[in-house]
Length: 198
Image (cartoon, rainbow, N blue to C red; front, side, top):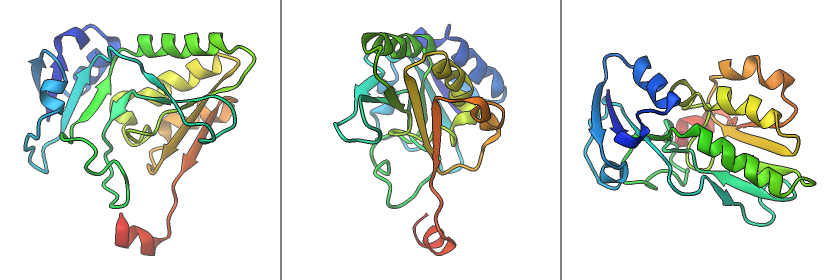
């Protein structure tokens, strides 16, 4: 495994946690994730790669009116790329590089979510975490669900939607059962569709 790590991301606790998980990985320091992510580098099929970066722009992008739940909604840009390769998915070919890219400055993401919810204290605000990746499918690397389900629950008007194809439900077992503010949607297909398209 190769871990590309931005120098500015090294001090983020989640980056340190990810690097410590993969003791056999080759860690390469880079200046900016786009120097790797925007290149069509050839990574052998059996080689895994992770990009650890700081998001310096906005994490929350407004969802179109009528998307998902009623009221205001935002797509969370916290991870790029998906471990699944479903033929019908718009993520196939969406990015030049297939490395899982994790924006590790979780404190900044939490602050942005808090600011949005403070701006609209009388409205339910939905945050969709699944538009650029699969949160459960990448959970063993990102620890996103473990970090953000309790955080969302601490904000009265915040709601989190997680869409997934993954059967890795371990991080949900203890948290989702008592979480009033998180909704998990699973994609379940018949075996015939799985065999043909997934």
